[in-house]
Length: 303
Image 1 (cartoon, rainbow, N blue to C red):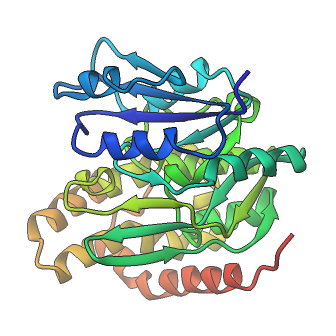
Image 2 (cartoon, rainbow, N blue to C red):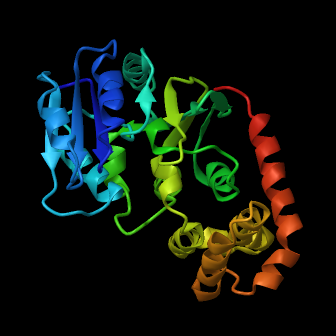
Image 3 (cartoon, helix red, strand yellow):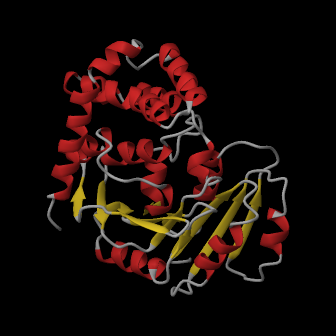
């Protein structure tokens, strides 16, 4: 059985997939498997994978287009290792990540999942998305996740396969916020370690996965519907801020069509405050709640 399974969901990422594959297959730990789950790509993805001559590489192609969460869940179901790491096909792992994860989980049997720090690369600019060093579960972690006080990306998440299966894996019906949703589910029944290692690189370009979708409000609406904690009295101002901030940001950038589309999504939402003006009135208080949570997270000590 491999020490670690790296799952790479992909769809039409032929330009970046070779980099992701190389970063996974050149890891220090030789005892691993890499599963590429192809969400019915129409580019050269299949050829790229098949010409990669490595017995540790497995290729699963879906018969019809689905989404990244379905692809990740198929990878989880197919994994032969008890440990799973996720890597988006436009991101990369730095050397040593696989071995570090294997050793960490072996030495910390109570840990169900890890959320690591990561680097964000946009052209020549590099930003560090830093996690506090802590082991958290329950309400404390839920609070930070609800407040958007922790930087998230799927490529920085690793977990025990059984923990993922216990919470049902990724929600196949979520268009966004899948990483936050998964961690909220894990937080209720498992210990999640927040790590300071920066051995994940998230590439943030104009065509990166995280920038292709602008339906933030719809994704937030679906997330809130699944996690009622967002609607508790202490989070009302925060929820209003989260719902309207993308509209404010788009207007400040002069992206009027985006602001209009997100504003309309807010009016149609089932779980968010539908009054745009009412949400704007709570914007500053909600932003302050998030900033306080970020400051609290920065003060959390190590394990």
